Image (tube, rainbow, N blue to C red; front, side, top):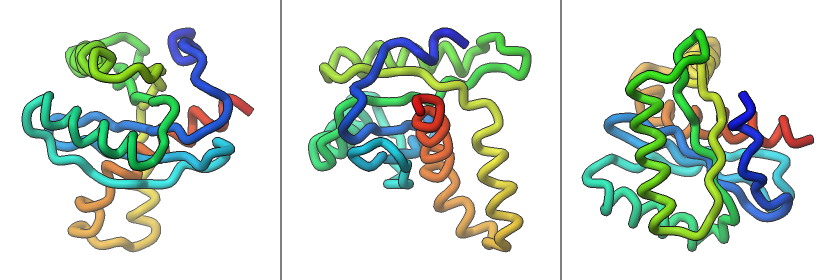
Length: 148
C-alpha cells in the first residue's frame, strides 16, 4: 500500500503507534533509535476532544516526533467504514498537533496478538486488559521493521 510510506516520519526520535478501536485506543511508543515498539497504555474513548487531550499528553511526556496510525483495511485491501472513521480521526488529530501521522496496514494485528497471548496461556481477563496496547505495538513494530 503506497499510503504506508507517506508521509516520511522523522528517522530518529520516539514514534507513537495507535490502534484505534471504537471503545479504546491502544498506544505504543518506540525507542529513540526506532528499533523497538513497546506497549504503553490503553486510552478509554470518550469524546474526540478528551481522547486527543490524553494522546497529546502522552506525546508531550514521551517526546514523540511522529505517529503511526493503524489503518483497518478489509482483507481484499479495500476500505470500509472503520478505515473511513480512522481517516476522520487522523484529520481531526492533525488539527491539534504538528506531528506527521502515517498510516500502517493493521490487518490481522489484533488476531496475531490474540493468538500469541493464547499460546502464552494468558487468561482471557488479562488479554482484554492488554490486547489494544499490544496491537498498537504490533502495528508500530511493523512500521519500524519496514523502514530498515
